[in-house]
Length: 336
Image (cartoon, rainbow, N blue to C red; front, top):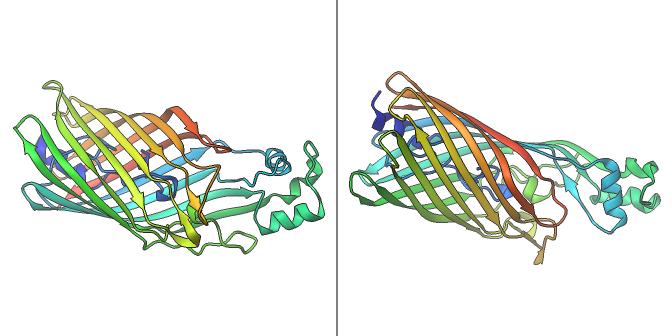
């Protein structure tokens, strides 16, 4: 399988997690669509597709969690806090060239948030009203409202790239995209209330993104892919608007002529605070930078599989928020 062909097979199938992040990533947490550049895993890159490509990808995120007593203490301090322990997103992608300098990628996603606990929904508030929270009193722990999961079809992501510079060694593209509100926004807690919009599989919002991507070589053996993206969205369900965000990805692929390609990435997402009912959500927004080692495998002439692990080397979240412990990705792609 030629280097150029393998590089293109990966383009439409892989997604910091920003999304993006990551990650998105899950769109609700400020993650943008993830791309998959020339041999990289998360970076969008600038190598334009030469043939149609389909792919599957699983992105998983895991979080630190608060104890019930911590949630009770937050409530006593007047803080409504909820959390979840994990997110899983599954992507089906289809990419195709429009001409030699432009391609388009479509992504359908299925999202699932798991392990919710809330100290401020209707059930929790009713319980606290009858049993006032006292800091340090574990007897009120039963006022925390749990929910097992929030699964469903997510929003549809459409991304295009136009290559405006190519000197044979270096390529640059502009990136433009839209995230369409096709996802489910009606999931309920185990107590029967509608889950907050940012923990629904979909957003109810139209989100736009734009940026630039680069592909080139540091040396004959090391390929480089990078991107910078900006996301901004309309108001979604329940008067909720996700914070705008910046995202960057830089990926170095080593020995990229071989069938096994190690990849090392640096990924970052910097997102503003969310807005709900025209008020800024105090416990939202923040900055995360990930170090992401991974590996790509070529399979025959048309297929490839890839996996990576991302660790947050810098994480500064606003207000009371759950730190992300780690994330990983696993994917497969094939040209048609």
